Length: 216
Image 1 (tube, rainbow, N blue to C red):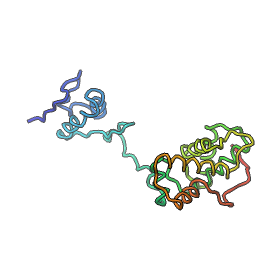
Image 2 (cartoon, rainbow, N blue to C red; image 1 turned 180 degrees about the vertical axis):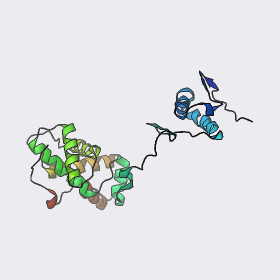
Image 3 (cartoon, rainbow, N blue to C red; image 1 turned 90 degrees about the vertical axis):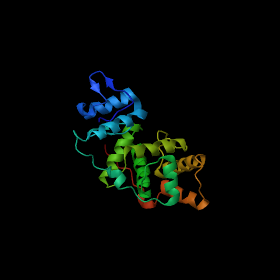
Image 4 (spheres, one colour; image 1 turned 45 degrees about the vertical axis):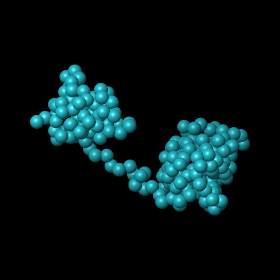
């Protein structure tokens, strides 16, 4: 006996009662467009009952494993650093990139180098900083660099200002903004935790600061 679906049975040339007759990708699109996300699970269950390979779906993509090779796990997630408790709570609450403290410090330094020699442009600043840091073995995304740019601006140190801000000023403003947002998000932090978070996201060690010699 054929499994029954109470959702929607026929739409144009497709039959949701016989998913084996429908291509995997088309079937997934049909589920989403016709019956909606909530009801799609019932239709997918019917497909599985027929032994059909149902594509994986996320909020952004439909991935048909019968047509495409498996995707390697996200390398950034594989290398997610272990963060101290207070830093991890702040990172999760504010949805910040998970980076080692030195990576944040290098971002501050790189941005200071860029604005010291070039007119500020967000696209160029984030691209140049990411590429330059990658050459030094520091792996950060343009998103992470952009987080610092915006955080520093909200913390009172916009990178387009004149004279251009030093790395220490960018770091301090970014850390101030992170802590201000953490307080607004009711992240529970002791005075010791606050100092740890400030050092992680903002402080610069003397050997982190470089003489501006940028090249594009």
